[in-house]
Length: 195
Image (cartoon, rainbow, N blue to C red):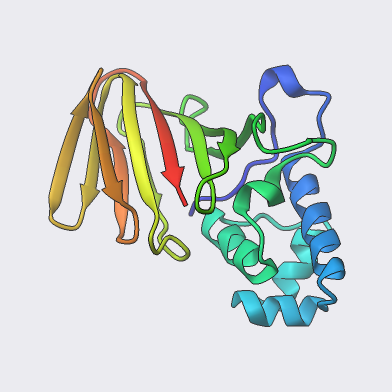
């Protein structure tokens, strides 16, 4: 499962915990929309207990479930994860996913307006690490990957695509996919999502 992690980037230790920001943002937006926790749970397809836990900062949430909540609130994923003092989404820079090893991680750098939004992330995967993409809210989304270092395999419907250092891959992300580091060193790549 791809859950948001509590920690931030090392140079942003003074910023609030990501899960605390998420909880505060969801509560505020839910109240502004005049929704009860039960109504938000129903609209997002999650349990009321999960909504209560997220708003209190006591429950972890997967990236795809956060997308569901954002859709139910009529907002974007990036709006839910950014710190309250952020003017906009151009500099979010939050560690939002961590794999089994500390080298495997995804940092949402920022977003830019598009038809909906474009997100830019840095990713790193340790040798043998995998990330399973979640497609719950990704209808019409596209992914753009650029490998900075290492060899990335993207397992998807229709076969596996190999992307080596200096190469890129663009694909629709409305089908299941998986990122796999098949090399012997840490894989680093840029991931942009056109939402």
